[in-house]
Amino acid sequence: MFAIFLKFAENRPKAPEFMDAHKAWIQQGFDDGVFLMVGSLQPNMGGAVLAHGVSRDEIETRVNEDPFVVEGIVSAEILEISPARADQRLDFLMA
Image 1: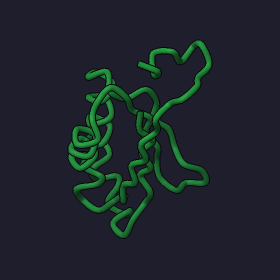
Image 2: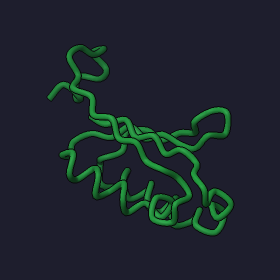
Image 3: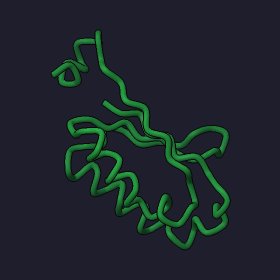
């Protein structure tokens, strides 16, 4: 499982120009069954993604294809989590 933090960077003013492409990238992550949740980092610091079911190399490739990353609108930090215990509702993460 991965927690991905997309923090605004130098080219933040370009965000509106690439927002539709970024949203399409997010939708593709959901369509592929990789993204579990996306949301905003508060206060107005960027975004975060929870992902699962892929290797570290695959998630790095996916993140590096985000138009916001490509254009330097955000910098990405990927943290890998090895679940040891979870609420029953999250059992699918334990596999």
